Amino acid sequence: MTLLRTQGYAATTVDDICAAAGVTKGAFFHHFRSKEDLGVAAAVHFSTWLEALFARSGWRDHADPLDRVLAYVDFRIAIFRGAIPHFTCLLGMMVQETFATHPAIRAACQDGITIHAAPLCDEIAATMQARGITGFTAESLALHAMAVIQGAFVLAKADGGPDLAVDSLRHLRRYVELLLTAPQEHQGNAA
Image (cartoon, rainbow, N blue to C red; front, side, top):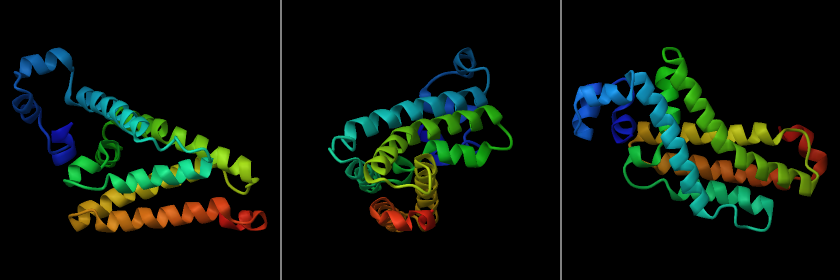
C-alpha cells in the first residue's frame, strides 16, 4: 500500500512490490495472479483500514446527527498532516489511474468509496429527518462530500502540501452546516 500510495498504481512494478516486501516474484504470484489482483486486494485492504480508522475517531459519538456530520469533516481536516501519501486516498488515486484500463480495480475502489460514504449518508439522513429538510438526498450530499475530499487530495498533491486541501474542506464544512441548518423554505434552492 505504501508503494501504491507513494508512486501510484501504474508506476509501481511487481519487482518494486517484491523488493519492498522482501519476497520473490514466485511468492508474489503464489498469492496474486496478477498486479491487477494485488490492486483489488490493496483497495479492499485500504477500505477496511479506513473504516477502522474512522470508527476509532469518535466522529459518531455526538448526540446530534448534525454534530456527527460536522465531526466527520473535522476529522478529515485533522488528518491532513504528515507526508502527502499518508493522508491521501489510495482508492481515489487508483480509480483515477485505472478506471478505463482495469475494471476490477475500478469496481473495488467504487465499492470502497461507497462503503465509506454510507455512514456519513446515514448521519446526513438523520439530520435531514430531524430538521425536516428536503430538496436533495442524503446520498447526493454524502457523495458530494466524497468528491470534495478527493478533489482536496488532488489540490494537496498539486500544491505539495495540505494547506489548500484544508481550506477546501473548511469550505465543505461551512457548506454542509449552512445546508443542513438552512430554513426549510430555502431547501429546494439549496441543492
